[in-house]
Picture (cartoon, rainbow, N blue to C red):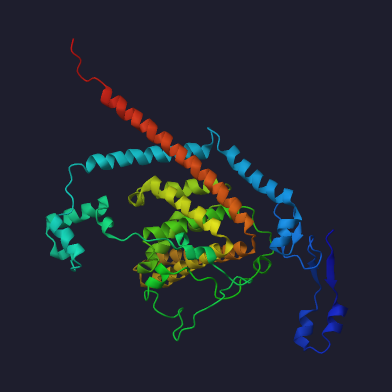
Length: 420
């Protein structure tokens, strides 16, 4: 049975008789707090999303009802499975994306069969570290250089970036109870006022830093109850974050404004204020953008599946890793907004870009505070839902490739001239 503790005006006045007038005024309104339903000792700070039971900590959440937590995760998985029916609209949409992507892939392969690749002499110059300008190349070399860029030949020379969430140190990320960093490095120069292009290696090799100050509770940010769809929106945001980092090989500071523009174009939640209601809907929109002509060069559907695997890895690391990822995403948006001033844009376009970046920053901050208040069990459950969607997407891709191979075999076996 939940109990309410009410601090009246008289009690507040008697307990703070020696305090200043400002402190007395702060207690002029009555404050109501609820006792934890499980331990009956501490004030409740959280609410179970299934049974609405109030609890104060993770041990109390685990002990409030085993049947409640297990059935909650089971029902979530079952709901996602029910949505993956043969006639499901999202499945049809994904099949259309796969068919369109494979057809475009075949066209590119057929067009590139007769095209020449980058010359051996130019490759040796690049590998030797010599500085080469576009003006130094002949017309034929410029043509072959651009063809090599489009075909991905030059990308083989770049050392692959290992995401920080794949490193062993990511499994031991720790934050203070209020969500801030446990240890903060103090330097002579303030990092907020320093050059954002300086020391890019620190952002590539190290785990992103968490919040510099304590995260406020959601009650301080809004009076309304948080949307139950925030977990779905988090999947969209994490996809955009992983996409942007992998596209820039981990070094988004080399082009902060371009990276922030890419992030908003991939994330429909931040870029278009979309509100997907299922994990399938959120992933479908992101994958459709990945397979679009603008980003087809990144790897298309196979690259999208790898990004879904990145989302699963981040979710399995727990709340602290998610908070650090969202903080890193906010830094990207912040620096992108600062670098917007140096871009040659019209007044109207600059105003629209600024509004979008600031709106994305507010959403990321709210999402960071929400993630911090959730128990770690919620992320393992969400990771299972994403894994189910990944298996479904891979099954769709296999079926699409099988049909494409069948059509190709039929075309090859067709007799054009038959002897009579």
